[in-house]
Image (cartoon, rainbow, N blue to C red):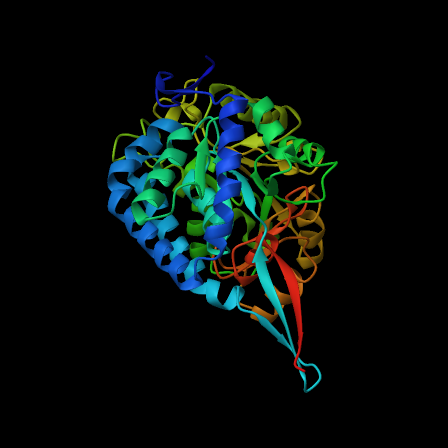
Length: 460
């Protein structure tokens, strides 16, 4: 029997071990999910909404207990771990609140003797494949609206955070979800690809790497079904001369280093108008040096390890490459406890960088940020767009009209003014370029999980 081992970034120990499902087991789960769709889609929407609210309550009740388990799996400091679970509960409630609007019939004008409307009907079985960095939130983004829309769901979580899928399954069961509507499976890559290609799967929601996204699209090449992809980012921030510097520094440091920089919408590059540049850099470095790097089970720690030693080595290599090309690192890693190798990485701030360096164009996904001086809006816009990614971007300014004007020219899915590294469930979560395709959250996020069915009823 093949097994899945969760190697904890905390100390390199095996935190959990699970048997990998055989194809026969996955086949059975798909069969049960398919059989369950008919009765679930006929369940009144208000009952699905009520179940979602009960599910959210279960998450809230268990956040404190499940938080340390999350820290062991992927390294987030325990002081923040439970917050993801309560935020997932809040997000589930927001999606439930949007469901009535999103899923209502669309009335269409027609002849006096006819009734015309468009109904949004569920697709069937939705396969959700989330990433490990925000394992509850990313899963909830697709699982909850899929269920609200009347679909059944098969959840295949990251091999780094498999216990999260088990917790979600238990919470949904406690909330009263009927048997067969939701399944959590642990599978290897080969079995996952086979499930993606299976004719019973009506939609795939994938969060991961660009390479993984191409794999999903390839597995679906011979099928006419949808695939939502969230594939990462290289999110920029632009600090204008009229910005509130203290506010910008506080939020951009957090946006760069929260979750050890392992956020698809985290800040990875910053452009500052030249007259503010040195003051911004000085304040940014001063605040960065106040982080406490260490064991995430320590309640004082606010910067934990990255997920794997191999990824830590990649981030170190990216920093070294930038420095060898003329960049300058402003943080001495020896100032931080445990920053001596393995998964523990000190935060790093790089200056004298440019776009010939991959650190300013390609996703790093670690606690490092590059800062460049720019001469105004035009240069900032050009540099913000000079990346294969486009998930979020932000401007820091007191001029609302300038913020909107600049945002109109930046290739991004979400545009912030005086905020970053944040997701509001009422807004559409989308990416452009290599950040993916499709839309989750908001009333629009339900559209990819349903299909329109037209009704043309003539009275005789």
